[in-house]
Length: 204
Length: 308
Image 1: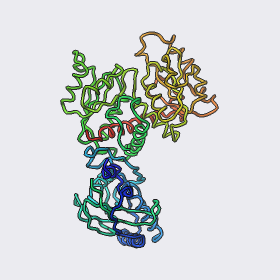
Image 2: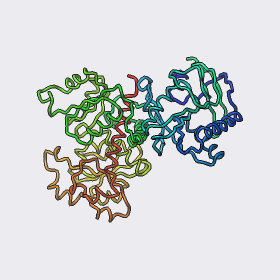
Image 3: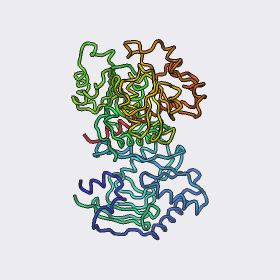
Image 4: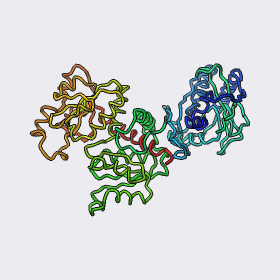
């Protein structure tokens, strides 16, 4: 089986890139820069949402929750309030069901509150085609009608969008092609350091 | 792996351990979905499913229909009692006629063992077996294992006793396969006339004394006496059966441990199970019914998901 197919099939292409041999990697953000962005996000959120009384954060599975947890932790450190947060899985709402060779494996949805009348901030690491965000908004509605929805991403790949979706908060905006991957590495997930890379997909 | 090794769900016998685990994991995702304020997801939006029931059913049919509707599939129902089957149409003809109306999946219950296997060789749609005679009832076994896993944390290493009419039970056979593949120990218990010959060759323990079976097991799956399938008398009377094999609270309380009681339904209260057991905290019968919808959603989702 060609490598690329294997990667797409697993659905977590960001983490298995190390099977690819001899590939160009370009560093986009290092640990220090990610840390600065994380702090900036927290201050922006505090500015717009004050004490988070009516605001909830939702991390988009599978990789959004990792970043979400960091934001929630940092927010608590800075403002002392614990923001309500949950994980949202949009697998059953995706528009590519039956168009892939395999059904996607679902992840856990963990939302212990209703979002009726709340301000919701969707959190993900990379914004690529905008299709997962569309599916996530669809999935989100099952928990009520939010007052307002915002999107926060660490990396915005601005040239590859399929849907008219723009982030309200972004860490860094990059110009990438469909032939490239954006890889997000977290130290607490077994990588050497927090880092974000751009890399080429292997040709089949 | 996120794909089943098969296009049809005909029986547990054809599934691998990984298949079963994938179904159970997906089912737990769907269990969360059906506990949301809005219980519907759009996954099977463009799929039509025919529920073809040649034999009576309440729970299974309702459960499948709910599962299909919560996945947003279009559903058509068929039951043989008011159909052209009465006029002598054959099984393949009936199903092919349904399929020519562009149906993608068929959920079938039939009184002949092997009917879904026969169908899967002759028609193009995905087939889900919802019970074929005394052979298999795969979704029931999957939901039973799911319920055990939910209650006790894991199926592997658990001791499960299947008690009652093993001879006529498709639930028993599917459960034996499913539990063994997941690493549980299985015992069958019932009057000797209602145990199939050579049942030990499936690798199960055999016990005639219900008290000993209950003392051995962690989970008791109690089956109904299927009078409709019994052409001859296998025991003198239901009263006598209940006396020797009926389970009541006093019997459970006299054991040195607390076991979990299951029943695939419909219960004959006062025959195999007393009301004081069926409605007690030890019984997970209604959880089984709830889990049935989630497990069937998982099966339909996984079977429909692959590009044909």
